[in-house]
Structure formats: C-alpha cells, structure tokens
Amino acid sequence: MTALGTAVVGATVSKRRETAFAWARSHRGVERELDDVPLSVLRGALPRELVGTLFRCGPGRLSAHGTNYHHLFDGDGHVCRFEFTSDGVVRFRNRFVRTREFLAERDAKRALFRSFGTNKPGGIRRNAFDPVFKNAANTSAFAHEGRLYALWEAGLPHRMDPATLDTLARDTFGGRLLDGENAWTRIAGRELPFTAHPRVDPKSREMFAFGLSNGPTQRLHLYRADGSHAMDEPEVHKLDALYFVHDFALTARFRVLFLCPARFDVVRTMLGLATPVSGMTYEPARPTRIWLVPRDGYAKSPIVIDAPSCFVFHHVNAWDHADGTVRCHALRIDTYPELPHPFDTDTLSIAPSKKSVPFYTEFVIDPEARTVRAQRRFESPCELPFVDPSLTTQEHRFSWATATDPASPMQVFTRLVKFDRARGTETVREFAPGFPGEPVFVPRGDGGRGDDGWLLAMGYSTRDGASVLEVCDADTLENVCTLALPVTVPPGFHGCWVR
Image (cartoon, rainbow, N blue to C red; front, top):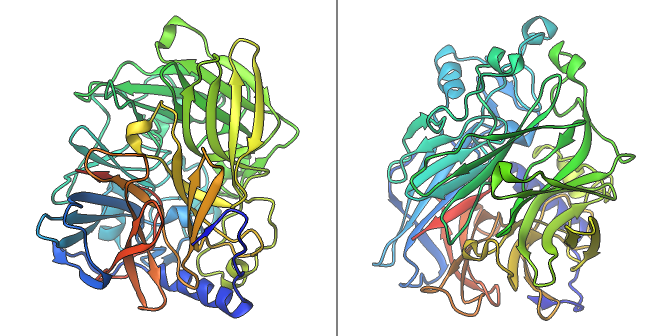
C-alpha cells in the first residue's frame, strides 16, 4: 500500500506480459455452472460479521458455437452469487443469464444475432438490414427492493431469482419499456433500452434509470420506479444530435447526465458493413452536453450546459451543494477509450496510446449561471468506481476503484485504490501480475466513519493460478481473506451487495 506522493515501483516488462497472459487466461470462458459450493480459503480468515450476498455480473465467455466475439462487451452474460453465512462459510453459485438470444443460439448451435462489436458469420448477406442485436445481459448485477436484475444498456433488464439465479423474465415493468411510437424500435421488437447503471435514492427507495434509443432521431428515455417496482410513464426527450451516454448521477434535485459527442454510421451498420462499435466515432469538435433534469419530471425542462469535449463512462457520485451548485464526481477521459480484446496480449501489455485513460474529476455545475468547472482531483488512472450506495445523492468522503500505475503502459488495471477527498490522498494496493475487479464496499454493521468495512473484489491470482474473491480492509486495503473460485470466471464489470 502507498499514500499519494509515495513512489510505487512500476511493473517490469516481464511482469506486464505475465499480467496480460493472466488476463487472457481469466477470459477463457466459464465451463461449469455450480450450486452452492463452499469456497476454499487460500489466505487469511473470513470475518464472522460479514453476512450477506455479493452478486457479480460480466461476460462469461467470449466465444460460442464456433464464433469468436470481437469485443469484450459481446460476451454472454453470467452472474456469480457469493453467500456469506454467519458460520463463516461462503457458498458460490453461478449461472449464465438465460436470455432469449442465449437460448435460441444454444438450441440452434450457431450464432443467430448481431452484437455490439461482432456481426453474425455470413457477411453482408446475413447482417444487412437486421436491426435486432443480442441483449447480452452482461454488464451489471443490480438489486432493488428484493429484486435482482442482470443489465445491458441497450435492451430490457433481465430479472433473476436472487436465491437460485434462475432467469425469471425479460422485464418490461408492466409494459412501460415497450415503445409504440418509433418504427425503428417496432421493427426490433418494441423493446426500449435500459441502462446498466440505475441509481436508487436511499431515502425514498425510488429507482432512477435511462435509455438511449437510436433511429432517425436519437431519443433519451428517463425512467423512475418506486419501492414497489411501479414505473411512471417514461419521460422522453428528442436530442439535437447523436450522443453516447453510459452512466449518470443522482442528486436530491437532479438527474445528471453527460451527453458525450459521438457519430454513429447508421447506414454502414444497417448494411451489415460495420458493427455499432466500429461505426462509432468520437467528435471532439462538439461540446460534451451536461443535462440537469429535475426529478419532478415534466414540471420543468432540463438545464443544458455545454462543457469542453470529453468522455465520461462512469460517475462516482453527485450531490447538491449548499452554495446552489451541483458537485458531480466522475471519471473523465480525453477521448473515447478503445478497449483491447482480452486475447490481444501485445496491446494489453503495451498500450498504443494513453489518451483514453480515465481520471477522477470534480465537476462544479452552476444551474443558475449555466457554467461548469472541472478539476482533476487524483492522479491514479482508474475505472469501475464504487461509493457506499447509502450515500447516493449525498456528499461522500471515500470512494474506491480499480487503478493502474500512471507510469505503466498496461491496459489492465492491476491495483485497487482508495480515494480520500478530505485529505486529498490515495491509498494503493498492487496485485500485479494478477488483477482485481470492481471493488464493492460493504460497511461494518450499519456503517461508521465511511471506510469502516470491507472491499469485495473478484479477480485473478497468478500466484494461485485461479479466479479469486479478495476480501480487503476498506480502510487500509490490506488482505483480510482470499477465497478460490472453483471455476475460472472473467472479472466482469459490476455487482452489488445485499444484506
């Protein structure tokens, strides 16, 4: 571990290569689905007071039925369940999400659907004028008031049984996520997109979400569901141009969205000559448009503020400041990040460009003056940030993320980092040549001083040659316990903790 300003020796070339090959090994694909297998403790001891369930979601495999997926976002969705019991045992269960597309391809034993970065085999003949893309359900495991969802931002959420991980429904929230207006979505099945990053107000228990639907005019759909899962009529805004939005933030007053400038080659994509990702181009000449959308819905119009062009994939948190501004903390990137394929070990170990590195940035947004100021707060390149969900809409002090050495050209994030806003310090733990996944914070009891608890991170250990679940002290990042998974699981993207 190290604090900000203390040097950390960068990984050697050989260690970088070892990490790149470990990253490839971890993505070779889940081969078995297991039921409630007790996990072996490799190091340390489980805290008896750590009781609850961790859910993690990600692409479970990057090839199927003779087709190799060309992008990390295309892998078939897979959810892991880690049940921490009061007798000091962690029971592991895993399932692929039984999406309609997963089942159809399983029965046909061949690829039937286009994906974000992969067209169907067969060239133009099989891909032209096909607007139906696979809902991979591979980005986030999200819990809300007793329900569990596997999420993918361009399609419907999949509701799963939180005990068995059986896939229950392609959830339309009582038909609210079925579109009757747009011919484009009618052709594709009327299903509206639903973000992989909903936000829950910890006081009202309302869930807020959004979706971007494409067509002749791009539309932004804003959703709100109460604690009983009843969803309001979606609020729909037609956009003046094409944008990319992956995540958003929530305050007591506003939904905060960063509309990042992008151009989509719709013609080449619909002709089967391009995939959505290969047809997307960053447009730095346009501003990044910040929308503050009042939470009282149609009563007020969005406040729109132009900021210097940038990309924001993930938000940390946001809140309404006493001076009337909105403080939004996000990971800012100078340009659209190009994610290497997990099996491209050369690119993984030596990145061709460092322009697409995210940094923790504070945006001070003034709704009255319609201005925004941005300031980088920390120096570790980082991704997959996590804040105690009970602090959503409130000012936080601590947050955690995966990170990389600023001096390293590695494309793999091999560290965990803790950010302390009050002191302006970073605490870092290095895992190279292994790596951690997203750190999920679990407070001790009902919480304490903000960092009193544990971090749960599913990753890969080259020391053990296995996928592992790391339990770390959330304050110091020191190891509390390392558990071995009985199957190799890609580290995936996002998860949640349920008491």
